[in-house]
Length: 402
Image 1 (cartoon, helix red, strand yellow):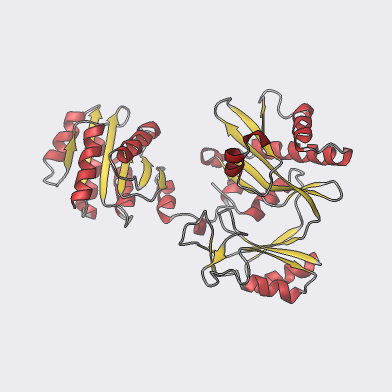
Image 2 (cartoon, helix red, strand yellow):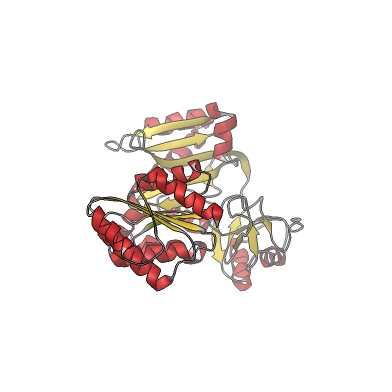
């Protein structure tokens, strides 16, 4: 689960992480009140959407960026200038390289104090699955996409894994400080407090990632989170009702929200072959083989091992409502999830929802013969497949021949 920048900063501040003062605003009256409370003379007006690259983005009503992008700095201006900048953002659609060409509507803004910046750095905490440890990732190249830094200057990325038995220690902080050139006493003290608070927040709130880009060093020698991207492990949200209240459903795909309600693991993609699979590994293999045969997957959808007929029907409905789907591939290996349950769910879904695209089903494992019999006797136009390669070839041919 992702949250907005202002929410991430508020959360991190609870753990002693330094952030510029700021207030969220949902309308122009609140923008004025926030600007007056902060006082200036420098204000930063920041669009709040779940996407990066906001400052470099453009609004659909202003493609030439005459009034700038999704982040506007008002220097030595007036409260009215802040309100005018906000007026050009609120309710407008912002397009960035992460939103796609359709963009996202800006429904809230962060009005923040300006910061006297001396340097910009990059800092993140994430789970390194290779070492099974929370790992600090840092770079002197703040304000840039970390993927670009990794491609162009990998030597500028520092990684420090933290042993969960000890937690973050002074030597971890010193390693990062020296690597980033934070060698003055004030800088080291500020950065150490920042890192310790960031790690504490990460562990206690079951985060999946905390990214600060840029982490700024002020001319006073303090470090501060100029931006904050925070995401959480969905599987741990039951422990954090306070975090669940932060969820902004307007920022999420309606299909993905519905999938959450049915306890389905679903991610919408840009292809034309809808996939329904049990098991994340099998789902990834299914997506790969679809690409191998010349098509693109329209989604990742793992119904899990304990799916019921109702969940299978819900999953099928989510796939068929995607207008980009030109064909559907169901790939089930029956273990805990029995093939006859999947077959009954698919047949019930097709009868209730209808089927306007080719459907290929590959079943293997527990009760496979029962599952095949159920589909064969359904009277529906379901194309059976013997194995994964056969299934991928058949659905690709069916879609390209349609």
